[in-house]
Image (cartoon, rainbow, N blue to C red; front, side, top):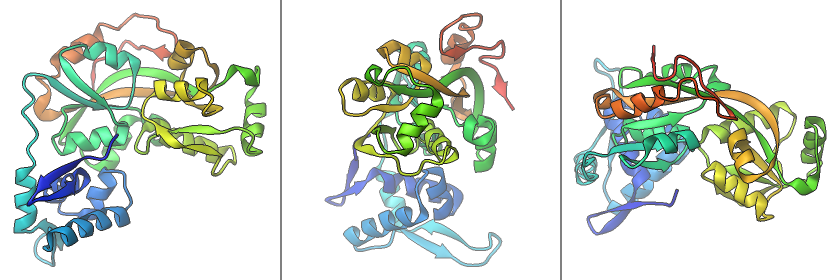
Length: 308
């Protein structure tokens, strides 16, 4: 996702700073804001300090003691900056910020605006009210997507709607021949294969890093650019830029890649509680998938149901 800025007092301020300020205002903590945006606290601190240096004035101040036991709050300048950043109204279109998925793209159709930013990034956009719906798949890392939301303590703000399962694994170029998992991992460990990684904050990036660690692989050779979608992964492999990447079975088939399954995961939909009415059409479309058989997907009878 390209770097974005907002113009404020004749200087450019990174949108990440706006997102941090919005979350600090809501939760009173820069460390929690950093966690929700899936960035290190040191990065969040640096972003705020850089913006403050540019503006020559503080954006956040600490408050000690009191009933809240110490917290952070926005300064007058921080509040002013937050107020100036007002995205256009939704204009009747559902705003979806999601991990990339072909079925979700087809379901959304023309009545929504969708951007592929990754699971964690999409949820962060929901929490700062820059989107109404997010598609996430973090069940492999947290046991379930519900557990992930519970770990963040955000279930009072969002609702989890059951989606479907996906088969995910490693797609690789045909010229490597038919490989079994052991042979593929061996080549990766020996540094003979170059990887295309997904963007930070994506569920696939989180899954791939955890799986590679489990296989005893650390810092595998990879090209410098990252892929924001499964299609981007496939294109990098077909173009000869990379040898392999983590991808859904559906997209491996779509682009004609060799494929080795790694896991089955849940892809669910998160909706802001104040946007459930706007998301009714999408939820209805989800339920319409019930009974379909689509290679690479696992569609259960509970699709479209609220998970609590």
